[in-house]
Amino acid sequence: MALLRAHHMDRFHKMKEEERRDKPDRKAEIAERRQEKSTFELPLSFQPKLQSKKDQSDKTPQEAGSKSAANSLTPGELLYQTLTPTTIHCRKKGCFTEKFLITNQKLLMLTNLPVHYDGYYTEEDLAGMLQRFGFQHDEETLYIVPQNRLAFAMMPSTDKVQKMLAACRRTPLWLKGCQLRLHVVASGISMALFPFYKSLMKAVQYNVTDQGVKTVYVKNISQSETWRLRAAAAKIGPLQNFLPLLDRVYIEFKDARDADQLGVWYSRLDPAPRYQITRMKMPDNGLALQKRSPEPGLPLDSETGATTSCVVPRGSLSPLWITLKTSPFVFPTICPWFNHPEYLTITGQDDIARACLLDPTCPSVIMMTGLPDRNYNQVDVATLVWPYITQQNMYGMYYHVIVLKLQRRAFVYFSEWDKCREFVSAYLANPPYMQGSRPTLHFLLCHTHPQYSEDLLYTTLMEWSDTPVVQPERLELRLLIAEIFSCTVDVVKQVLEVVTSIAPISSFVPLANRICIEMAESRGVAQVLEQYKNYTPTDIKQCFDWYVYL
Image 1: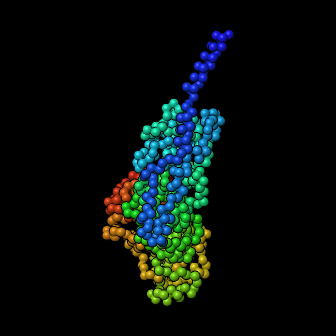
Image 2: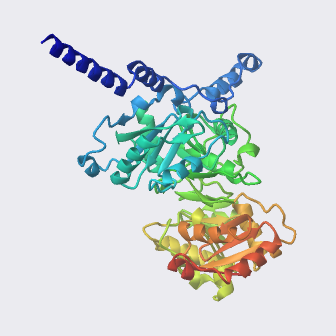
Image 3: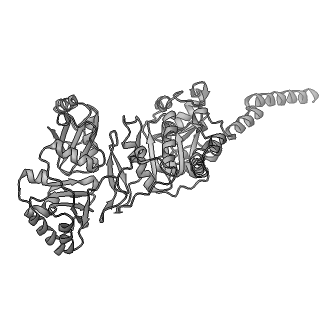
């Protein structure tokens, strides 16, 4: 019996010893979890350069207050302190069961990424490691939060998630000497561009109330450019939030008009930056707002591009659009950021006599504001005035009726005052509607005449768009005209994507029936015309919507 008891005791000790060897070190596991729960040290390249107290002491109280507001960190910049892996709701177990396959939980959180410094690793580096497990990389499937050393990756299916987890158990993933840890996100994180921003901030108990109009998304931006952009944005207006990610930034303003001004500032940069900006939501269709007057401490107009008058002509509607030199080529605004020639709004028959008193030469140019934002073309506008246009031919259609569709306004040149007066009287007696919108008429009080060459017309339109031609010399050699049958935001983007893929541009102005594009160099025109011969559209609509000619 004693020998049997000794045998069982030896067997019991051996089993305990094997169990102890197989069981992970509890102390090491606890230490590892504490390390994950602890906040990560923010790399120097992610630390905003705040002004010292000594520097602020040299400022006036008003300037110091403005600087203090600009330099205070937003919740997004404090993410390195508030976001930890434990704040994200992840699955604890059950990832290898059959039930998991029907959960649709395809989002992975990768932690323990290397400490990031500018250019140390890229989004493509991480995406390349995941692609062998079936990962498909695009803008909405991978986000990296380098200050927290974590990333979110959306896999195509739960089946691929299981296979990846099993493979990484056998052979862990390593990036720059760091072993990555994988967690399956159970809920709480959305991967579409704006929902991701909202859900990530919600994870740290910050509620984003903006629906996207006040928020600008920036991509393909380096860390050094990120902080220069942050400084510029803080000068434009008070920041509600500023969230830097790897190669991306979310900038939320307190006032939607400041988001406008960031787009205007960006459009004036020369050369155009490498990064791209997008407003997260187009402003709602409604009355255009008056631009906010600059507050003390904000940059001068020359720094922000805010050179236009703050007065908004009656009947102006938003959204409006300004043009950009690089993709996405247009930026929606809630305020009109272009020049308005001196005008008199027409509200009744008395304004006809008033216009003659203000301008003894009798104005014969009408500005229309409040045009619809879609579903009309050049012919629809021309039809309103065609009985009163003397030159009822292609010259009349192209140079007497000028429709700036993305600015939602038009200019109509009448050959004589009597025709202009007849049109206004008929309009007041029976105001027409276009797609539910009733345009408002204004007499132009400045002396302007129709331009019968594309380069002179382009020069005039660029001045009215508050983006004067920088090099007017030999402009006709650099000007490219793209004839279009319908001017929509998508068509404008398609045309500019094709043109800029061949040669760089300086600027452009979209009309209802054509896009006038100023190439950076005259040889760019020849390059576009030559390569356009062999252009194969990816969409059948591109083939019929436009063609290029000189």
